[in-house]
Length: 327
Image (cartoon, rainbow, N blue to C red; front, side):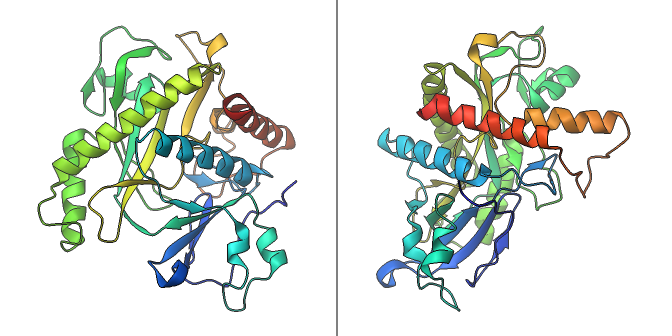
């Protein structure tokens, strides 16, 4: 069993801490391009708030699921990914003071050594079913991120075809915002200008978002089919993409198709018209919604301490996703 790790403070430069992952800079292998060390901790967040109670082993589960999906995505030729290695022994001797074998071993199973990329500041979301924020928007306007949907759909319905619904990628503590495709193109345009021509002078925001939409939906389609064969519905998921230095083609970064970034349902229990039997953070969200309804939490930081049954229930659902997908 991996030790519970809620936070890391490694003697490596460039530390950045997100909702789940701590990221550090690593020198390039053999004098090559610089790399990143990504450590998946056992932190868990909901409603963009990090909970004070870690879910032991969650970082190892997330890393294992991501790495398996990254391998499949590359084998199918759907995208290149940022993943270079998961071997913690490559960290021995890194840092100042240098990491020893024991310190490296404590990170086993929860690290990715990755290509350093310029990350496009748009969350690329694919939805094949109607739920979550998409369900709320549909009830109000009949659309999801500007995509018009048929009338009369109910929560949990399968959409006629998967749709691409981008979102802004906000700093921690601020909520990501669903946006339409045109606005995503504008965000991408502004980002490209800030790159100072590093990605080539001919690339436009619209062309970039067209490419990312195609990649997102292709990966979702393949993953949905794979999950369906194993009794799971992949209702929706989100990806991030970036560019290696000097590269003209985006690659998949961050994580892939984990229960943190995706909505997985039990196919045998799928029944449109309400909440579905899920294997993701929805279990935690429902507990927190109950606190909010009783006036015990306002969905702002700090988050509440989580009781043992909620921690165990969350971990159990994550473990079930991994078991069903990969044995």
